[in-house]
Length: 377
Image: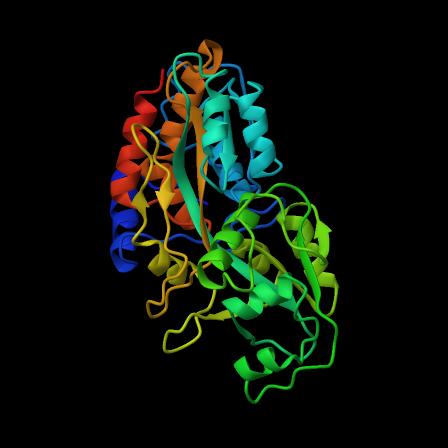
């Protein structure tokens, strides 16, 4: 893709934000996907406004697979501009990324959910004079993808999704599904439900949605570990998407880019609004537009409204964070962490997301991210 100069970037990014109500979040991450507009994560162009001052050597990071495509773009553009600096982001899972961060083996971690209190407490052993904080960088809709021969348009609501993943609805022609899809021919076929095998922020965000909207049918705490009985497990969003893609009768959850790149149909959600809502970046933005910072001090964790019934608002959403020490970062990697995250939060870094089918963090929150990054020590 071709990166524009700073003024053009700012105008384009702000214009796009104005159109979408100041917050557009879209499909996050793929282990090997191209982006939804076909640009692909493999192309790198030296960005024009990256400051490499102080950056040096190798910086290791790991975590969320949801932000993998975005991270690939950022890393390649940054390394093209900053000769001699190597950024190595290992796509695993949010849970593994947090563990690595709290063990001190990475300079920052990617996570689809904010640090829990016990994880913050653990981080103080690594952040000698501070603690781990959450910096929102990108987010988007969590799609419910499915594979059902002859059915390319499917609507479900929260209780039905909960019952499917809780092994209470096991056939595609179950009356609850039929009622939500009047006039459509649904086969007498077993549902093959797939979930993440490892700790996952995407799992936790799905759990938050189901807990907020279908508590009677989803009596579990929203944790990164899959809580329900039955179903089949696969590793990473890429693994779940691969299973759904190849198994007729399958259903699973993953960031929208997996569905887009592999032509996997996605479920429209009946939220109680006038019409079912499709999983798109624009529709997710309507749900996330009211996000508020719930973190204290330098922590910028966001509070999302999973139970929204606003017209056209897609409710199953996530925001992906970079987790860093607010103070007490390792001296040998601090300058590189600050330089790289300054780029990812910049107009130019956020514009890369727009070009690749992602979208910027809202201006007001991103301004706080930039200020926090600048003050890391």
